[in-house]
Structure formats: C-alpha cells, structure tokens
Image (cartoon, rainbow, N blue to C red; front, side, top):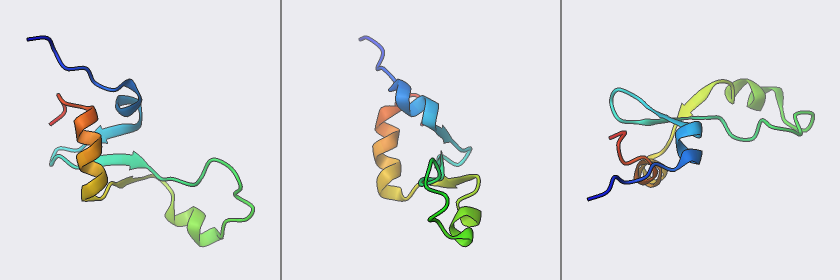
Length: 66
C-alpha cells in the first residue's frame, strides 16, 4: 500500500505538540494594524493552540504526525 501524502501547506503552518495538540500562528496580524486595538495586537502575539474541531481537520492533513 502506498504512503499517504502530507499536505505541504499544513506542514508549513502547523506544529504538533508532545501531547498531540496543534499549534498555529495567531490570525489577523498581516495588515491593517492601525485599526486594531493595542490589546488585540498584544494578545495576538506568538502562537496559539487550535480548538478541538479545527484540530481534527488539521490532523487529517498530517497523517504521520499523530
């Protein structure tokens, strides 16, 4: 049986933690920072873990990272 393919876009954007959660960059920080509040910019720093529903979708894209 052939190997399953990993989505290249997913492996570039997501990382899997040791406990199996998915870590992704914060959304909404590419452009338009003038209209965002300082609190939003501060809270959107770094990375975040995805919710369970999104996590299930992303895990199907990376079959060998379970």
